[in-house]
Length: 238
Image 1: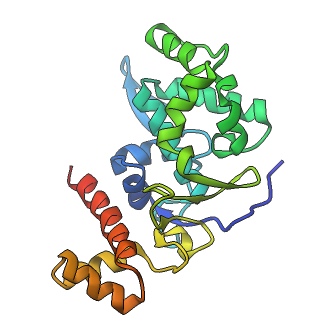
Image 2 (image 1 turned 90 degrees about the vertical axis):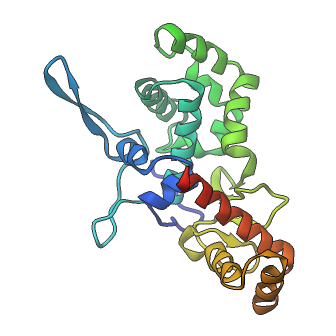
Image 3 (image 1 turned 90 degrees about the horizontal axis):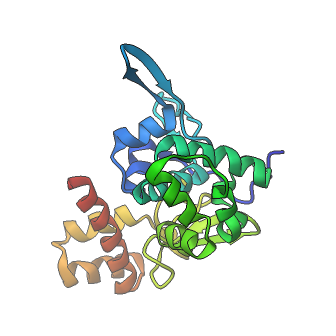
């Protein structure tokens, strides 16, 4: 049964979602939409990752919600660990059955005991070894905590906020605020606006101070915005 939403859904165009997840946009799109590939002279279809069902904006562009964004990040964490997409898809299907929810990958329950999903999951070769590792709770948390859950705040079992620089900084994404855009916590000012303003003022400490005065923020809050946006730009250029 579909769980009621505690927060708004958020709206992340595919390129924005890919940047937030540190993914190439084409890779993100393939995970969301599925793709065709050649196999022994035939064309075969790879289905999308479960829970990443595509949504479209008014102009036809792919848009993910907050839960889908977090799911994209967790799939990337498993891929980085060495699991293939077919194995991740089987894990997603098993998780849905184990926890009885449409998107258990981004629930507090999955964070607590998601290693159960990997027990007895079929795989071959190196992936079998990785699954054996992930079946252990300590090892499982070492995979998912740095990539996602350490900086996610839950409301009940639902993911309600993501603090991409960590809870000791002031940048937060919450689906009920500014359509889920990165903002300064407690202020609602988007980080891209602040970073652009600092750049327009020549950057550096002087630019930070001017922008902080304009928006009635502390210099530390403005620096957080610049750091966050700078990480985006560095990843985009890589």
